[in-house]
Image 1: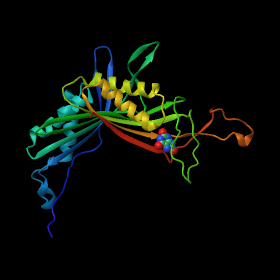
Image 2: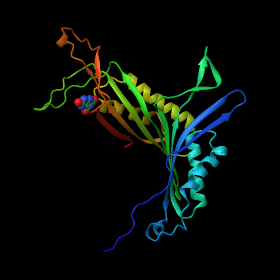
Image 3: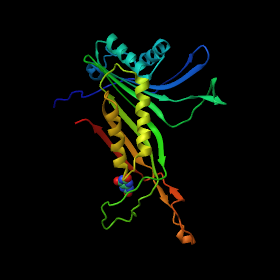
Image 4: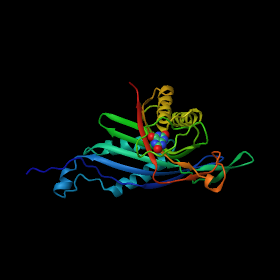
Length: 281
Ligand SMILES: O=c1[nH]c(=O)c2[nH]c(=O)[nH]c2[nH]1
C-alpha cells in the first residue's frame, strides 16, 4: 500500500497585535488578529521528522510583531501583502503564504462633535477582514467584513413558497429582516486604494440592504452582490453569508389583544442560513 502526504500547511493563528499610531495631534489605535499559514516543501518534516525546512511558528509570530512596527501603518491589506511577500521572498521552501487579518474597530470618542485625541470606544461586533495569498505567480487579495449586524423593520416579506404537509409558516408581506452579515470580495489587483474601496463597498452593502424591497433573504443577498459588482470594476466576485435572525410575531390573541406587527420573539436557534456567491458572467 502506497501512502503519501496530501495537502498540508502550517502556521500561527490568532497573533493578536495592537498598535498606537502617534500623529502630531491625535492617536490612532489599531487592533488586529493575524493568521499565518505556509504551504510548500514540508514532506520530510511530516514523514521523517526532519525540521530542516521548518520556519518555526514562533518565528512567524515574532515576524508579525516586528514587521508591524514599520509596515502596519495603513490598511490591513497593505500589511498583509508585506507579510506574505516577506515569507515568500525569504523562504525558498515556501510555495504559498496565506495571511489572514481580522481587524477590530475602535472609534475615537467624540464630545460636542470633536474627536478626543486618545480615547476610544469599541465593542462593535463588526470586523474588517482580509486574506492575502501569495505564490511565485503573484499575490491575490480578498477582503470583506464579518459579524455586521443588520436589521430593517419593514420592506421585507416572504410569500409564495412551497407548502407541503409539514408547512405551518404563515406568509407575510411585512416582517423584520435581520442578519449577521459576512461578506467577502475578491479583488482583481493588488494595486488599489484599499481604504477607499473598502468603505465604498461597505456603504453600497448597507445602502442596498436599506433600500431593497426584499422578497426573501436570497433576493437581498443577490441584490447586494450585484450592486457591489456593478459599482466596482476591481471586484471579481462577492460571497455573502446572511443568516436569517428570526423575529417571530408573538401571539397576543391568546391574551385578547391584536399584534399589529409590533411585538416579536427573537429566536437565536434554529436560524435560516443563506449563502451565495455573485460573479461576473
Ligand atoms: O427569506 C427567507 N428565505 C427562506 O428561504 C426562508 N425560509 C423560511 O422559513 N423563512 C425564510 N425567509
